[in-house]
Length: 467
Image (cartoon, rainbow, N blue to C red):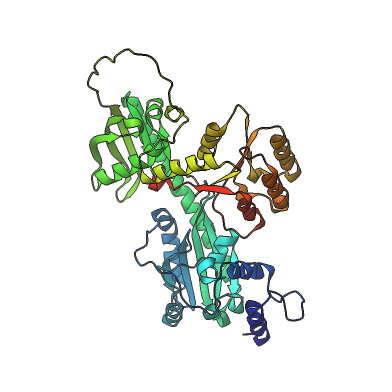
């Protein structure tokens, strides 16, 4: 290992991230940027603690796609000084295939094993966490690691993306000793990633086709409300769309999985949002041992006739009773979200809605607009479009704000970096109730993510699995 490089690393991690004489550092820009992120969140380069979760959730979709590819690679690399690591989208290692017993022992001593979290915020610059943070293939070798105890390794990691949704499913990483690094390891990782992503696409397409086929069959044989769903997909006919609230989708999936167990069909009563009770039949969709989803057929339970209501003077409805007054749902997480929305509306000011991908942030933002609106129009601008034509996108934002419209800045954490300062200025000067935004979470260290910190008020939408 280069002693001068190690000495410069020590100086930089203990002081400013430049070389001793003020010249640019000898390390790559992406490594220095990662070190800067690690220092900002307080990672200790001499530390050795790693968060550990022994009973972790195994992402079945990722394992179905990656398992056969990793099995084949492990067989080909058996006895070689190379380890294959698979991590989930939170940088927790869920599978490890060490090529040799000697390397396995070294990895065990460094706590590079299933159950350990290797996000940058916990363990500094490394092939798993930094690949997730940068959203691209990332190589970390020897002294480029932020943690001292990882300097003995070279790690080459690449994110695994869902080809349809674009979401990051996990990371594939190949790790070896620094003195045994080979040029062919990166092409090996990238080829394996392409194969795993192809398998994710094929699996998703096959499962969605199975769901669609069963949905069409159920709809043809019945005039009832029919919905077909799994963790990611919901297909509903007109009758089901009229019955279901957003919160019902996750609830129906959990209800069907709980009642089905090892069976292929079950029946029961389900209470939907707005106190609607339905008689439901759930049927499993998929092959033995691999559930693709469920088909749920529903009929409203007949209600007992109500006594005639007394005729009296009409009273004005409370605004909270109308269709836009409250977010529907019965879970604790939804109740907490309703409280946060009420508090945000009372406080006023530019407002940020945070949450994971697919939690309904835009739905909540438009709900806030309807609660706050006083007749002004609504404009939704997607920050992803700023990458195509930054000047035109900024012009649309400025004109929308000055025209008096309420503006929702969607995916604001994915704004093109060169516009970050200008958008932050717009946020600071915007009318109190005229600007809303959505993003994944505060706390990012890139320029786009820092714009989120200019919103004085934020609420977080819990994932659908909690609602």
